[in-house]
Image 1 (tube, rainbow, N blue to C red):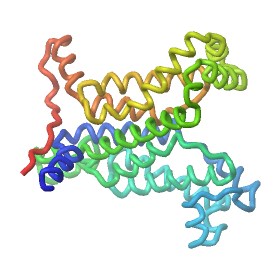
Image 2 (cartoon, helix red, strand yellow; image 1 turned 90 degrees about the vertical axis):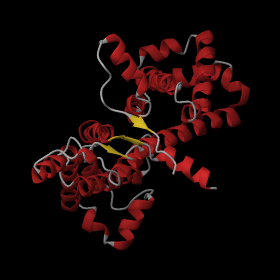
Image 3 (cartoon, rainbow, N blue to C red; image 1 turned 45 degrees about the horizontal axis):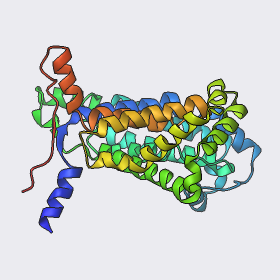
Image 4 (cartoon, helix red, strand yellow; image 1 turned 180 degrees about the vertical axis):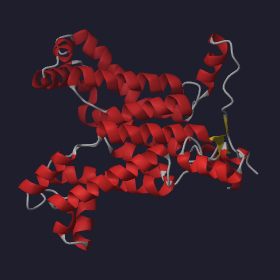
Length: 318
């Protein structure tokens, strides 16, 4: 039993540079703030035109159970809340009071997304991303590249080497596991409910053509008329989604799987308008930080330099 516990800890808590997690914090917070956040006016329009929620999400139901609805879900109340979340996001971005600001920003983001989806329109693209965003609040993501780190170094008058290495990989490990579960669920759904018909090419053609016509995407309209190519892409889709989890156990092939998944998501965007930007960002972060040896080797080989002094090694079971 102890051996399995040691293996579990070695997987989730390898010693690695805190720089990886700090870059992850900056990229994810900036992505959510400046790219993926819905503008305030979208929320205010919903608040002004709806006196009741059509399908309140669990988080929204909990808030309205504890507090009067008009306290938050009014024009003035929601405006204040929205800008509090934004300020928390900016503080998390620069790394000031990092854990607190990240927690407030992540929780606020959950509420903002739940609010949008409480009026009948629901999607699932944000789920993995915002879960990992919350996980960062409980990890040492402010030990590097942050105002907190700068203030800490000034107080000590010297750089602390203990800030450079930590068991800080687990939020990225969590992102990896959640993406694997997401892809596996999607692939198995196609197999169970679509069966062999999902591989005949016609199913993919139909979905792609319908989405492309509705969204006026020329590349998707063209793809919807290429039956042989649709067969190949159907097989590729099933294989990628069903066997993405292999990257959890075979680190050497993980970069190839991440790259394939990234271009798979890009293909869905360019042919059907399916904007899984959150998945794309997470895949890029996993590509460079979960298995860094591949790019460190290329760095040393093609730039003629020793690889950057950043390493990730499993914790040694005691």
